[in-house]
Image (cartoon, rainbow, N blue to C red; front, side, top):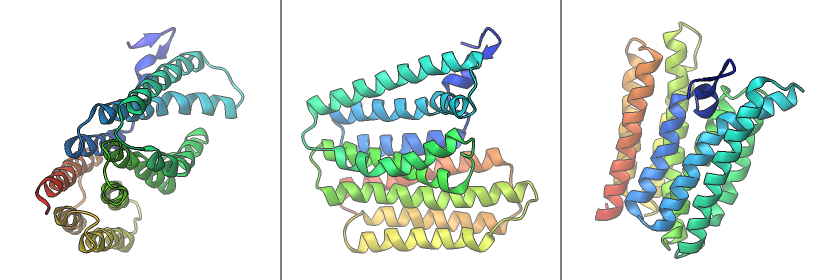
Length: 263
């Protein structure tokens, strides 16, 4: 799957943003680790399909906004329909097998996803706001998977809160690091403030027993890593991406351990 009539099919079928894979797989992995069910698996498939659909949908919307029909447009429409069908199939499995209602996190995530989708249509998806809203929207999958396993709503929301704090801090930090690597102006104090805010929010949630204590530890370690990195010479953007994926897996692992042990 490389080229069709001069069109690179791979560039239509798969997202080009590597960071998006982490923000998609983290809530899926966390949800399935703490609440493994057939319904959760269906929601995992649906979430992955929605993420994959973002690229072709973006291309279709961009071409519609600019009132043009390119060779890629038809291919993008077919991929969007295919991924959409897969997403609906995953949701159908969840509806049939869920032990409890799981809709509200997905409904709450709609405005966040809409902001990101609108930016995609305008080719402004690299902005801070669409990146933040996109990451927050994807985190809703963890809460939905937990609710499908008949979790208490507060505990399910806690999973989303941890992931939202992680994505908020990570995105602002990564943007600062990329700008540093390119020798461009960046907001160091804003990057520091984002880490502190994430620590405080998750720390308060842990004190209120909404999230595990190990989740607060994970976000604290994430913040320490950001403080340390910002004090060191800049590194290539690819290095920033891989290290952030590792930190994301740490957040998922510690949160899952915290749920299973009560810590």
